[in-house]
Image (cartoon, rainbow over the protein chains, first blue to last red):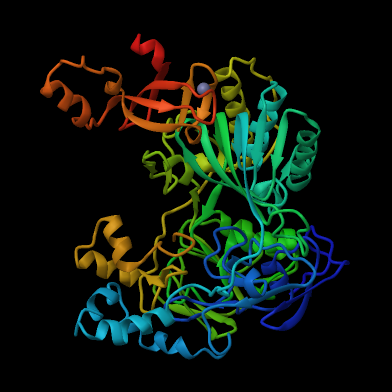
Length: 538
Length: 87
Ligand SMILES: [Zn+2]
């Protein structure tokens, strides 16, 4: 659904594309996911194990559900995230894990047999008789297994690899990364700024907050423009840093031409090895889902993602939206939705003392304990009030937020372990986990925009002094500095399956069963339940 | 991993070829006896920690280096030209 007059992309130009053979259209700046949402497509894929209908959950590279196959013949690329794939004219995408069609899928019968497919099913079932393995089990498993399918032909596309060297590598171009890059660059250091999006800005592209009196997205564009004018700065967009290796060597994957209809002489992707004397980890944070029964139904999505679709792309999955979570992002999301002209059906906050954020139905101390709807999406949610009574609310979409997990992944690549921060209810990096790399902003657990900006300046100056250069006196721009108010909410008890790993179909019950059978260590639990073993690593 | 070549500076390990422990530089005298030659040809320590190794900078200056590094932490302590070590 398009929200007329909303969003930051221009919908007057039109790009034609096809999804499962259907002719649809979007606009320049759309991802495949936002274009599907603009066209009212809610069912985008089937899950791996139970073939459950799934919709778009996120707005970024963390997407577990909206995996599609893009391209045709030997060019086809399975497991492309619709939330990352940029739309171009003539794009062809098809859904996965379904036969004969997305709406009518034979293996959805797995979902009815789910009681027999609990954690460790593979290990318990296919053990005997031995002669069945080759003849029966293996062929059946091979047919059902795998995410997407390749054509089998030799891929004729071009891929490239390259090397780069710099004084300071900044990983992530949100408010923290932009300020770190700007500070280091003004101090004369040779800077590379990598951001996985088409434009830097991070959450500033998706939120409504202001910096120095202008919209955050405009501020980010202004800083980006300044960085582009500087000879000692290389801005690498569409580039995800994938690994931290010994002695300041980093791997990075650039999507050079995956967003183009005709790549011409350019490779589709380029793998970079970047050698940096210092690095700043400003990779932001990922929003956590809440585990409640039926949280995988199309129409249930992350609150931060929904704000992104509404504020940046000007689209929404439905007119009537409920918001559920455990922190101040509930009110923030409800506010943005109401400002975009959507009906906020309810703001459901698990904290008993949650403040009413605006003029909408406010349910403090309450949780969502169930969802209802058809295969195309959500029709209602069930709320459990503090006294235990339940009420059912009709809605088209539910935004959920369980708080934010700092993106500590790169900090852990050399064997360092992050530490648990009880106040933030999240793991944060320890100093020195990767020599020469400092984590700042949301990646370090500092979630307010003001803290990100100040942290970026400090990290830029720390890099300059480590390089023997003079620190820069830069005033932090004015921005919101709201405390991060959250109460842990990991799962909502009750009947029904509550999904933890959407991509590999792992539920709270599977994890409890694994623990009961003494697969209690994280590694054993992962192996036993397959949690975190799909392309999104859980 | 990066190795500090005394002639070329810090370079990616892909430019180098690994040969083995630097004890190869301590070649016994021809008449040192069977035990010394057996030790030189066949016996190697397998340390978890500090080592000294021979690396060949084939994609750089072509020099043989003695590299001191730690097999546990991957820390590289330094590198010298093998011809200066062996003197
Ligand atoms: Zn050399």
